[in-house]
Length: 144
Length: 287
Image (cartoon, rainbow over all chains, first blue to last red; front, side):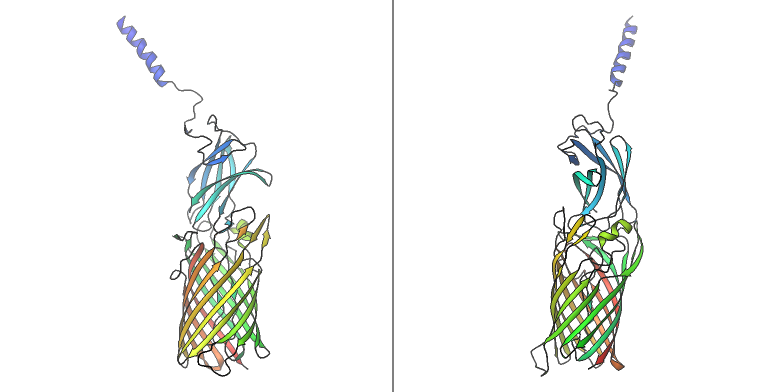
């Protein structure tokens, strides 16, 4: 009887220890809020986070993934508007070659053909657009 | 020999050609025609706060240039400069592109003649320049090839300046000062407003009957380009040091070889620094 009670206790304990909420996102950063996200779109109430898949070099173009999340609950969210990105060098007043933006899944976009035409201080700019009209833009500095 | 001043075109920054001053007759000739070939390689990019970032991939420009000048009357002269540029870049957006750079026209007036060979007063030639945006701009070339085919600054520009020369025994001295204004241009939905720029150079040479060995340093400054809807770009500044050797051949032919280096002088900002070599052949016609 004592052994049976120990077995039941162990089974219950192991079940509790292994339990995880099914809606948990393993990639979610718990500190990811509207106030500290990398690309902050206040009007749309969306945060975007940049994850490099391959940083650009002089020899190879780079590639990164943009993750758009709802700052209230940290869940992936698709912006209402079209997602675009470009590279700009404020000190020189010029951009770089065009990047390619492809939607991977809801809230996730891959930006490829990332190429900086010279070394220096650049901005990676992410825009929410309606056609050719930029509705909202957020930037992140990048030293190449 | 002091009369032989090759046309000046300071190496490009990030994006195609820079402001160009055609050759000016500073001697007693009626006309001159020069053809030059230069090759430059970008060494580093410099940020707005002066940090040098060396380039990993090769970025080489070759410029074949024809420039000439001829007197119009006694003290007036007119000239031109036509560059053809080939740029070869290695790396992710590598390739080769060729075509015209920005063509420049010039008029000049000898406002300070040296008819009496005054021992102190220099000879002075003032000039006006007009730059035509015949080279493709960076903004135009970015969507096509990441800027590879940018061979011009891309703005109409007017400039004014002066060249002062003086010989003293076997030595000669020269100095050029110019200011220019580049006009705004709209490409796509953006308007680019470049503003003012200027340069100052000082040089000296030592002469024999047929040889001249010389050097010069030129300082350049350009206002940052204002782009509609963007924060203003930072001012561009760089200095170019040049060593050159000239050889005077029979029948008023002159050959010049030179080496220029933008990594030696000044406190560059917001620019690209290059090293370049040039050979030039010039024919002059006496009055």
